[in-house]
Amino acid sequence: MALLVVAGIAGSPVGVGEAQVAPPIPAESIGPESTDADAVACIQRALDVDTGGAPLGTYGARTTAAVRAFQEASGLPPIGRVGPATGALLADRAPVGCADLLPSESSVVAAPSAEESRSYSDCPLLIEGMRHECVRRLQNDLNAVEPSHALPGTDFFGPATRTAVLDFQGQNRLAADGNVGGEVADLLARQAASARGSGSGSEAAPSQTGQGAGAAETAEMPETPAPTRYAALGDSFASGEGAPEAGRTYLPGTNENDNLCHRSDNAYGVEVGRALDMPTDFVACSGAVLNDYDASQQGRAGQEAQRGAVGPDTKLVTMTFGGNDIAFSKIATDCAGAKLDPRRDTWAANCADAVDEATKSVAGRISGPYEQLLADVQKRAPEARILVVGYPRMFPDAPDEQCATGVLRAPGIPGISFQIKEMTRINTLVSTLNQQIRQTAEAAGPRVSFVNVERALEGHDACSSDRWINLANYPASTSVKNESFHPTVAGQAAMRDRVLACVREPGSC
Image 1 (cartoon, one colour):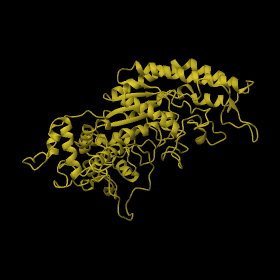
Image 2: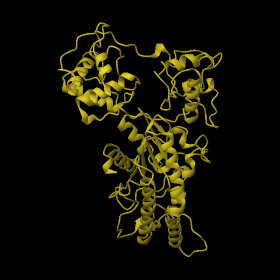
Image 3: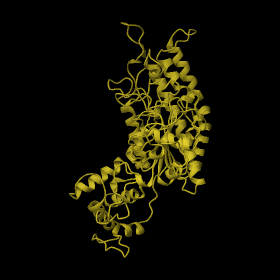
Image 4: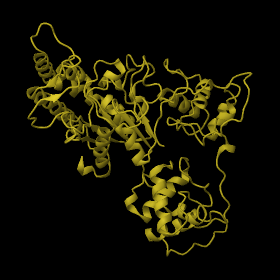
């Protein structure tokens, strides 16, 4: 699964004197998406990584930077991931017991024989979850045979690649296991060559080195510019606040008293990464404001500046920022009657004042900081496409009746409802915020697009019987209360669909 899963340590790293049981087979490489917290902790200890107070075991921006610096100093490509070559060097300086957890040459799947994989003779058996340069060739070949797959051309074999392989195997009446080697690789290479017009479809004769059609195809195939990493930035609407996976809370380490980033496995950014088969640096955090892009977020232990997820290898960036800069969460709760100003006669007056004040402040609080943020993203990731995602409306365009807020007055007494004038005011505020964000994005240059999700919840708004947005959660703990007025799992999926449409058809943004 191509995403950054923020995980706490499953157990303490193996240390001096601890009993050694059969160690897990190390991954071919370890990076931000790794869930093996013990292995990540070994890397952090070997490099003496300053995690900023966060528990060891999370492969964040500081760990990535430390690995890159070590690789540069060691004469290795500074990719920020720990593969066999880096792992071998780290094993000499890692704590006792860590060597078995780090990637090594012995942990890489051995390449099948030429008889087993004639066309990809220089490749291992390609299976889901692995990272290998041959996967780039595989994705390009699958795209040549069936362009509608639109695979990104990366070195990561994710779910979308496996689906395309299964489709190819089914169409050619081959055993459908989703793996590529032997007959599957041989046939795919021939069909891809034929589709490109560079071959007749017959099997190429082996070269003098004993390599078959696959090696020739690799030499002749033009390089395909392709996305490498994807950075998902933003606030609670991007982190998935209010949309935890069924039966559980949020990703480990993001639902603690000192860190309520509330990252959900159902957030639109995570889903976009899965759909595009791209390794994803998922750093969005509930409560983030625009300034948290380049500063550690206060009140969120271990939440470093989000800009650390953006670098030269980042080819796609999505972000949702701005709501907290105008205190939208406070406005929603004021309008839901959760906080009454004793100086006012009604909570409706509080709502009107809060909305009007925020609407007037949008331009001053959003434009300048957003301009600086987008300029920095473009500088740090000069080849990235940047999608600035707006906010969905909570209410129908023309509400004709009161709408429940979720706030109860007392047992047996009807709950507080939104009034029509409050709903229309809040809708206007969301539209004003989106319009300012859109103008700033459009002025930032051709690589930046605005993704309009204003009507993503249409028909499933806060007044619907099939809501895709959470109502107020009162009374409740702070952790649960923060989910109020945020998209549900279905709401995040609706935002995901708008983002994917923009990625695949830029004209639809």
